[in-house]
Image (cartoon, rainbow, N blue to C red; front, side, top):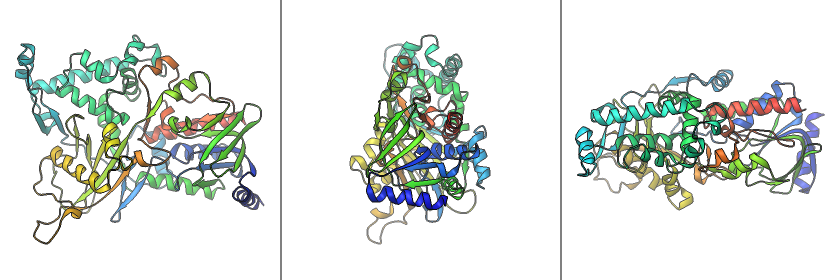
Amino acid sequence: GRGRRRRGAARAMGAGGAAREERAVAVVGAGLAGLACAAGLVAGGADPAGVLVLEALGRAGGRTLTASLDGEAVDVGACWVCPRQKRVHRLLKEHGLDVIEQQTAGVRVGVRSAGGLLGWLSRALGRGWTPPATFTTLYGLPLWDLLQYVLLTRRINRLAAAIPAGRPWDAKGAQGLDSKSVSSWLEEEGAPHNSTARGLMASTVQSVFCADADAVSMLLFLTTVQEEGGVEVLLEEAQSQRVVQGNGTLSARLAASLQERGVEIRLGVQVVGCAHSAEGGAVLTTRDGAKVSARRVVLAMPPPAIAELALEPPLGGPLAAEQAAQRMGKVIKVVVEFTECWWRGAHCAMADPELLEATLAFDVSPPRGHRHILAVFFFGAKAEKWSAAAGKSDAERREEAVRCARLLFGDPGNVYVCMYRVGGAQPPCEVVGSVEGDWPAVPGIRGGYQSFPRLGSTVASQAYSCSAPTSCLHFASTENATHWRGYMDGAVQSGERAAAEVLQAL
């Protein structure tokens, strides 16, 4: 009887366009946060038939996506986990997924060399210094340059340790820190525009926020460093493990388990409006005119996507201010397979964002066998520039990713992209194939693995997590986690927190 009622309601929605069905809880978004929320509701005793998950994309998983590269599972969305991320590790174990260690030995960097002590003396004496591009290992930098980077990292860690947990606006000098970008702060601290230390810190900011260092407030950066325990954690431990079957597989298995337990997940259904009240619940309207009423609604969406919904009444107070201030980071991930591992001894590389189009590259080859695979990342304005949304083709993105990888890891010799090889006289093709995640071009996401607030808005709104329930609405996304914001563990935390709120309200 339960199944017939649900199928009848679904037919009514599709047939009449204006028919309304009723549920106890509607979850908008089937990313990891939405799926974790639905799982938390069922685990907490909610009737599965009363839970409906609506997803605009044609698949579950949101910003997790695993693709097949000639039979090998590779993540073109969220990729890494680490031992301290207990929630996502619990889910991986529950769904039978295997974790392997990510090799991080021999980190390579691409920087504008500050010239060591000689360069510093030249600048101090006003003689100027033209920094050459340098591609080497992190510990192959001039000792003075490396020392400056280490001292800068320690200073940032000390400042971050003083940020009050969950209340960054209460930090000493918070307004000044929030109104300055990371780039501006670095310049004021004496890190010259072309220094090694500044370039490496700018690349760290890009890899965390999918945004350029001149767009991210120093207060926000310090808050993230404080939450995760240091710059080194963001650069190393956060990328220390991979899921063999891919993180998109976790989302797929979690969605399948929910459906087996009776939770309905509807794909390709875009919610465009929501009329809500504390007493009467909410009515969701989809793009095709269908309506769903629910006692509680969980908006499991990135904050910029929530801002595009027609909410009646509109959000108010600090929550509205924070939502309005959020903008989406941008990232493209190009995963390329080569016939040989020409980057032996170096498994990851990072570059000064002003030096190359791509900032980050990792060896994501399988632990066994003879597959040789690199993942290359474009962030921020570079991601927007190279996206299909800006008219770039996948062939152009792959060519640029290979070019940047060659520079970062050292020129491997003749590397030719297959589709550009014409005739039979050329050397053997080194590139076997590629897949990519062009996230700025994905409808409903159009960006990266997290959004971030504009300069000055964190102190102005005094709302950092976008998570306080309002009316009958609850919020879940990696952006409003209290730890591992921007990571899968943060998404799971936010979904489970929203589920607990809904269960208490019901």
